[in-house]
Length: 143
Image (cartoon, rainbow, N blue to C red; front, side, top):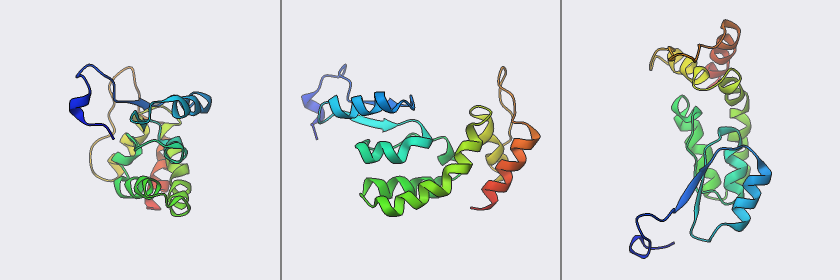
């Protein structure tokens, strides 16, 4: 890893990659300098991105399920991909539901169910439908 004093303040040291485009992700991971940090910004692909060399995740679902999300990420970072895969698979349905009607409405529904905050979002965003809210609530109860 590089030392801070070797870089100028204006130099980029990394990127939050949230495109979900694996062609782009693969090219970034292959072509980046060795000391350039890539962080997943897309919950559904954090596991495979870390397997490719990303150094962590900036997570939406981690706000509602911090232990489950951080455990999965930590296992990936420790190269225990078999154990991390189980955590990734456990989170798939919850993750999909949190984003099916746009972010952050889904995770706000989960946070309301957990008693952490309301599910109000600012315009032009809207709350998830009652059907999706019911599915999110059912899914989060599994955890």
